[in-house]
Image (cartoon, rainbow, N blue to C red; front, side, top):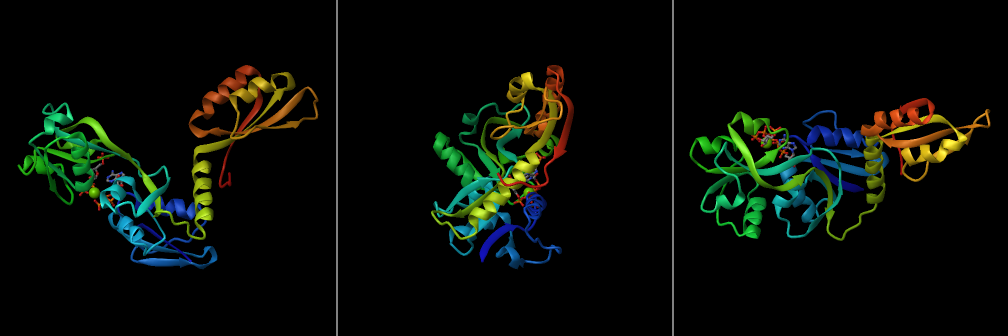
Amino acid sequence: MLRIAVPNKGSLSDAVTSMLTEAGYRQRRDSRELAITDPENEIEFFYLRPRDIAVYVGRGVLDLGITGRDLFLDADVNGDAEELMPLGIGKSTFRFAGPAGTFTDTEQLCGKRIATSYRVLVDHFLKEQGIDASTVRLDGAIETSIRLGVADAIADVVETGSTMRAAGLEPFGVPLMESEAVLIGRTGHHPAGLDVLQRRLTGVLVARRYVLLDYDIRKDLVEQASALTPGLESPTVSPLKDSEWVAVRSMVRKETTNQVMDSLYDLGARAILVTAINACRI
Ligand SMILES: Nc1ncnc2c1ncn2[C@@H]1O[C@H](COP(=O)(O)OP(=O)(O)OP(=O)(O)O)[C@@H](O)[C@H]1O
Ligand SMILES: O=P(O)(O)OC[C@H]1O[C@H](OP(=O)(O)OP(=O)(O)O)[C@H](O)[C@@H]1O
Ligand SMILES: [Mg+2]
């Protein structure tokens, strides 16, 4: 049985649970459940603090885990765990910030105190950049630390940026990293069932990112139309009763759908239909 750790609460929890449900796995109904078994898929889910997940995987106690890339790196498991695939959810940027108008560059952090919940990540970055600053490890509400005099700057997760703005802070310098939820596994280990899990998760990602586009087009325009809708491999072209025309079916990135439809219409395509993809295996 495959044993996998998933976030029990926080920003990643609901998104990861939805993704696993879409991928056909049983998920807990009650947030007090600590673990559940999905016997049909031979997989066991353990609901753990996202910050701890890399530790369980790195020590080989659990086969796999889903956590934030930033949390994974901050757990500092010495290469015992590795990132297997990004999941496109829980996206954030990790940035330095200070009182508006104070800092413009990370070099100005020399000799300053930086508050963060991600001390390993920040210390590593400072060392790499040769910046001699000290870090203050706090659990949360990092933004308040400057006003209370515990730190001069902060390093924290930014999603929309509204928390920082509300605290009168401004991000500065290059971001330390871009994060999102990732599937992690023990380094060099390939447990039975991992391939199926990855195929299913990829299926969810593709179903979320693409739609199916159908349209009719005059046969002599099919090459030009295919250039607009190349699909993942190659569009399906089927004959119509009217031998001058063909029907084309192709997968298209969701966010480009309307532009592609406009271009197809201008080219002469008609009966352009968009259908959502519920599930797929690529
Ligand atoms: N708006 C956000 N706030 C915090 N973390 C976020 C946000 N958006 C995405 N994330 C990601 O979620 C993970 C942090 O989740 P975690 O559960 O540890 O903290 P949290 O969501 O702040 O919850 P809490 O502070 O209540 O424990 C990180 O990988 C982070 O990059
Ligand atoms: O850029 P935003 O969309 O505003 O989101 C980022 C903020 O959300 C998180 O705080 P959280 O609400 O988890 O509180 P915490 O500091 O107690 O963890 C994080 O630590 C940032 O403060
Ligand atoms: Mg938080």
